[in-house]
Amino acid sequence: MVLYQQAEVKTLEAKARDADAEGRTPSPTGPQPGVFPGPGWRDNFDAVGTRHFFVIPNGDEDVIAPFISYDLHTTFPELLATSGHGCTVHSRPLHARAVGQHHTAISPKDKLLLTQGAQFTDLVDWALKTEDDATLQGKVQYF
Image (cartoon, rainbow, N blue to C red; front, side, top):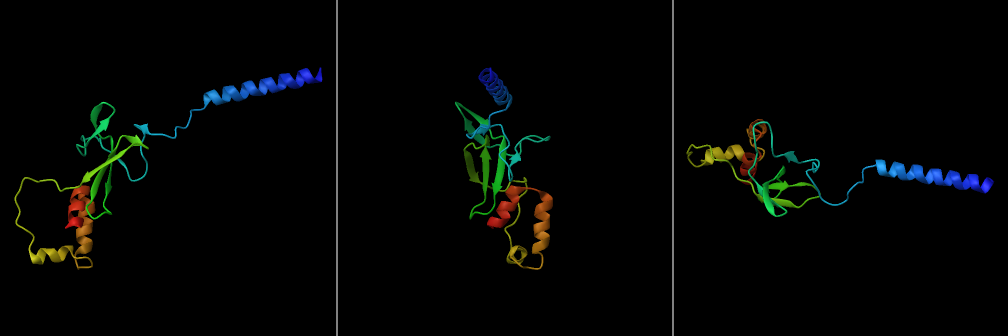
């Protein structure tokens, strides 16, 4: 009788474990399209529209990348794009957007503004942060 009770208890415990396992969501270790990639990434779509028109492959079709990031710590700053967490990361060089106005080339006097440690370097950095345009920031750093 004791053996039957122990067997029944073991059976009930096994059923409880199986029911608990079914209720848990499996944690995938592979690519997770549509899942936010993590720190340093941004949604490419905001209330105004698309930040960057960066087309990437998604199976048999091409889509606008849902997540973007900026790599400003390379020789040539890059725009990075991905479909989600653990998915392939695509890159292309950053470039400044045209504003529709023609400007003269930077003069030697203007170059002093961009010299590291110069008097107005902090002001230029502040203006770039205020503008919140990573492509402009990448172009200034490249220059």
